[in-house]
Image (tube, rainbow over all chains, first blue to last red; front, side):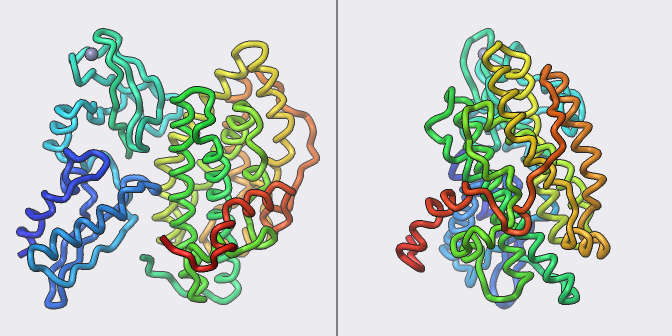
Length: 160
Length: 260
Ligand SMILES: [Zn+2]
């Protein structure tokens, strides 16, 4: 059953942010079950995301272990992934993990010098924070610092 | 990965050539940025440049895969990246220029990003849905690249005496490589007529507006020289590309078909 497969995919995690399942991350774009097996469509978060091969392999292994065979994992590019596809539960998990989840930019993200979003510190919830770098430990994150508790933290930046 | 469309042989040939231009420009610039890994002026910017490199190499892979499929010769993305020599590379000359100091890297990135951004914006509306899909995906990433490089151009230009001197020198050195970006040739004309790619002259106008406004804010002098280099899109490169390929392709050349 397709709903069982979705359930199983909750156990496949993003190797770089292991608190998120691939379902939370929004990279599963479709699950089709036919007499010939199972096809899972996935989409990359960023074009160069080095985790995609591992994710595809983990999905195959997870479903094969549950008795589904053969399992095909196909990559689709369109529509392009957006942080709007992160689940609400995923955002909550990020916060608990110490990563600030994406927030609405104050101006259109298409504007090159649009106002920066107001990012809250995941440790103390202060909104008195400063961006240190637009690019953090992975492509999907920016590096911030809290000016109240002085902790540096990752911000999962908005992509749309 | 792609369901490719069938075109007349003239269009298809131009298309394969054009896809290689996109792929090669992204790969070579990505490779150049990766040379900074572990050498950045500060840790945050070292990481930022590695992130830019990763995005560009990811985009190059998508373009190579589409180019290989569209050519229908049974090649893979790896064949295209590792088994072609400099005269077969179609990247613009700007991206193969040396990193120089951080100012030169930032300026090279900015001049390319401004072009890349508007080009991808228009390619996102291509009548070919594979081109549109890759372009729309890439544009989201390149929006961040352009923001990063614009901010650094302003910061260095409107910074200390030394930072301004260095980034002004970079601008003067790189300016002659910008003409090629938006000068259409036969490949561009054939594909534009087929509705697959935009009119480069329109991109030129957008590029110029963006570049002039950022350079002005950065208090930099816009070079008045009008003579421009060209040749990258036809495979005539500066001496730098050969050295890049020698390093990048070493393993495949020394140990053909090696995998790990
Ligand atoms: Zn705090």
